[in-house]
Image (cartoon, rainbow over all chains, first blue to last red; front, top):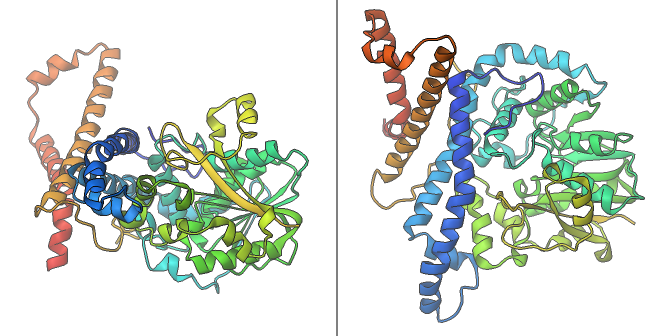
Length: 392
Length: 96
C-alpha cells in the first residue's frame, strides 16, 4: 500500500486513483521481493553455470553478468515490468496534482509560514546539466512549473507509491535511520547546525530535526519547486527548517558553519567530478569535529558481480546516468579528494529505525558494517548503507 | 493545456526481441491496474450497499442502464482503452 501523506499539502486523490496507486505499490513490492528473488535463483541455477563454462572461470564483472542476463527471458520480464511500474508510479499521481495545482502555491505559502522555518530562493542560480538533461528515475518534467510546488508534489506523492512501504510512515526512514545511527553510535556528539544537501522535499532533512531537536536544520536543493514544497511540508508538520536554493558543489555558506553535512540518495545523481567538488565544499563548511555523512547504495567493490549488476539496473534502465560511475568509486578516496584524512573515514550499515524497537536498534548500531547483496536494496531484509568522514 | 507532462523524456528501452512484445506487456499491466481499480470499487460499493440493507448483487443482475448512463459507460470505456494502449499511442506520435 502507498503511504498516506501526513501533512496538509496532501493531494485529495479520488477512490479510483487511490486504488490504482495501491496496485502499483503492490506491484513494486512484488517485483522487488518475489521477482528479484526469482531472478537471482534463475541466475544461480541456469545462467551462471553456462556463463562459467563459456568463460572457463567464474564471472568476474557485472558486465559479464549483465551481458548473459540480457538474453534470459526472466530478466526481460523483470526489467520490463519494473520499467513499466516506474512509469505507472508517476502516472498514478500526476493528474491529481495537476488538478490541485491552481491552489497549491498559495496554500504552500500559508503552510510554510507556520513553523518558523524559512525559504530562500535564488532565481539567478543556473540549474546544472545533470538535472536538466534527463528526467531522472523517469520522473516526467522534473523542472516543469518552477513557480509552483508541483515537482515537490510529484516527488512526494510518487515516493509514497514507489517506496512500497520500505521508507516508513513519513517517508523518512532513511533520515531517521542515519541520524539515529549517529546519535546512538556517537552519544557525545551533539550537532548544533545540520545541513542536508540535495534535500528535495525535506523528508529526510526533518528526520535530523526530530533526532536532534536542539539543532538548527537547513536543506538545500537546486530546484525552487521542491523547496517551495519542502518549506510548506515542514511548516505543516510543525518543524522549523531553513530551505535554500543552492548548488551543493558551490555552497553560499561561510567556512565552518555546520556540525553535520548530510546527503541521502544524492551522490548517485552527480558526476564524480561534482561529488568531489561537493565533498570539498562539505569540508569547508564543516567545523572542526564535524561530520560528513551520506546515505547511498553500497560501493561495487564490496559486492559480488551479480549484486553489482542487480543494483546498477537503475543506471541502465531507470534514467540514472551517473549511478554506476559513482558506485564504481572508492568511497573513502572520494572523501579524501574533498580534504578529509584517510583515518577519519567512516562507513556503516544500519537497519531500518522505523521498524525496530529502540533497544534492538541500539544494539544493531554497535555491530561493524556488513555489506552484502541485501545492503541498500529495497527488500524485506533491507539495511541502509552510510559513509562519510570526520573533519579534524 | 496541462503544466505537468505524464511521460519522461528519452526513448523507452525494448527488453524483448519480438516486435510489439514490450508494448503488449505495458498493455497487460495497465489492464491489470484498470481491473484492480474496478474490483476495489465494486467491493466497496457492495459493502456500502449491504450496510444499507440493499442486496446489490441481485439488483446488478437485473439492472437496465438508461441512455444517459450508457453514454457515460461508453466514455469510460474509451478512456480505459486509450490508457491500455498508451504505448502504441506514443509510437504513433513518434512516427507522425
